[in-house]
Image 1 (cartoon, helix red, strand yellow):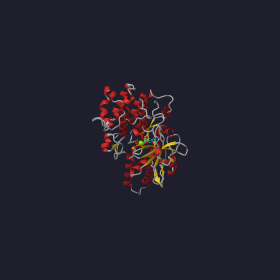
Image 2 (cartoon, helix red, strand yellow; image 1 turned 90 degrees about the horizontal axis):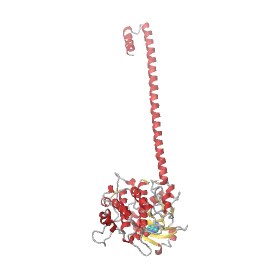
Image 3 (cartoon, protein in one colour; image 1 turned 60 degrees about the horizontal axis):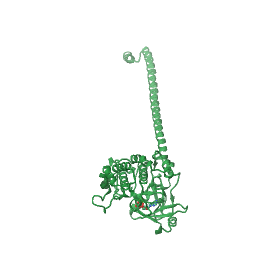
Image 4 (cartoon, helix red, strand yellow; image 1 turned 45 degrees about the vertical axis):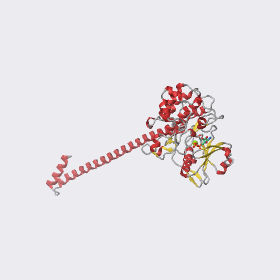
Amino acid sequence: MGTDGNSTSSTHNQTGYANPQANGHRHELFHSDAMFAAAISVTSVILVLVVCLIIVLSRRLQSTGKNRRSDGNHRIGVSYSVQNSVHYSSSPEVKSGCLSGGASISLASAGLSRGNRRVQVYSYKELEAATNGFSEANVIGDGGFGVVYRGMLSDRTVAAIKKLHLEGKQGERAFRIEVDLQSRLHSPYLVELLGYCADQNHRLLVFEYMPHGGLQHHLHSPSTQCKPLDWGTRLRIALDCAMGLEFLHEHTIPSVIHRDFKCSNVLLDHDFRAKVSDFGLAKMGSDKINGQISTRVLGTTGYLAPEYASTGNLTTKSDVYSYGVVLLELLTGRVPVDSKRPPGEHVLVSWALPRLTNRDKVVEMVDPTLKGNYPKKELIQVAAIAAVCVQPEADYRPLMVDIVQSLIPLVRNYISISSSPSLRIQSSAVSPGY
Ligand SMILES: Nc1ncnc2c1ncn2[C@@H]1O[C@H](COP(=O)(O)OP(=O)(O)O)[C@@H](O)[C@H]1O
Ligand SMILES: [Mg+2]
């Protein structure tokens, strides 16, 4: 190529335009030059096309791969969500006295949702009729957010109807969160929201009725109607609660932090199986900043994790701490804070923590109403779980999933074949081995 170029330029320089021979030669040269240039440009165009084609093809292949991978994930996600996880995004809004949005969302998780059951909207009049005009005789509880009535709905379902106090923004916020979350989260370990009423200024929540009420009555206010809970029942309650919190932490997207896990929010069914209730203070993991949620400190004294109480930094480990306190209540029968006890014993966690890992001392702290009816080996194991849950350092606390796995072998000994809750364990894929 270099030689040809040189010869062309020398011919041009030496002969000028008047030399026809030279012109003919030049013409030939021009001709071959043009052919050559054309060949080069055709080749380059083909090359460019080939390169483009390769790029397009490789992109297509990549995207197909991604799709396949995400399809795979999606499939895992779906089968997971059918059995275990729930995705949610929108919040309900109160529009002209009626909640819309989240409340009517059809449920993503058929396995956990008992089909596509929708949360009912009730009028104030319907709930007034269900509770005999909110009569005193129907009151079954009086909590931080309102009075709870036993009522019978028009379809003859017995329900617990919570009439919220609406002082301040917190009540309205609690109502919205409760409806929003509970209309989407369905697990055998969470108390089911049947419906709600947002008529004018009234805010009421309608829950499945739990015949044995709150765990705190059975542990802390034993009466003639309320026999002390035996060891096996306590273990099952501990596992049911752990599964409820595991569901919130691990099987919802984003994860949910209960923030008010305590004895009175553990409700018992006809067979003393436990479900977690009250999501009015719950926080979603999507509110995280740098892995933590910075928030106003709400909750109940005696159950608050130290780092949350002092800095407002909330993580799922705050629930693990509260769970540890409930586990201590189940073990000792003591309330979390009791100023009537001797000095050094006021705060349950501070009193219990140094004793929990001492084999002799742990026996001394067991609830006297158990009258020694428990296997010591199991006591030591449960005490060890409680000890890690109430560690002052959040990172040292286990995940709820670990607690569930530790409790399953202990509880297996106490599941009666006839009891219906064992069916709910089978039907839930949260921990299939249980
Ligand atoms: N779904 C329910 N079924 C039966 N009893 C319930 C139900 N919900 C609440 N209660 C009773 O009402 C009491 C007060 O409940 P709640 O308003 O949630 O108050 P708290 O702030 O103490 O958790 C509970 O301890 C329990 O005895
Ligand atoms: Mg409650």
